[in-house]
Amino acid sequence: MRRHELTDREWKLIQPHVLGKAGTAGGTGRNNQRFVNAVVYRVRTGCAWRDLPERFGPWNTVARRFRRWAVAGVWERLFQAVQEPDYAWVLVDSTTVKAHRAASGQKKVRPQTKPLAAAGAG
Image (cartoon, rainbow, N blue to C red):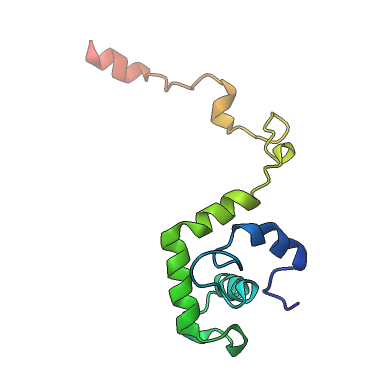
């Protein structure tokens, strides 16, 4: 496994949700894992499609397939499938949230009127 590629455990999580599985109608992808690894590589490195390493296949094929999956909503389904909310990290209480000093309820200090200004106004 290379640095920017999915582990076998990660691949097993998303494999049931990808398009082009063997046994489905229409064309099947030759290697879905290689394709997903190409997309992950591009997202993690920020490279252009043309700069994908040759081990992922022709860059134009990967880019077109990415677009087809996006239009078909595959990426959204994948994101929904792999989300595992851990509510222990969502807990918000006073030990983790600090309020600004202005939120402490301190009375505002109002400027005192100067005696000379008050006498001259009358």
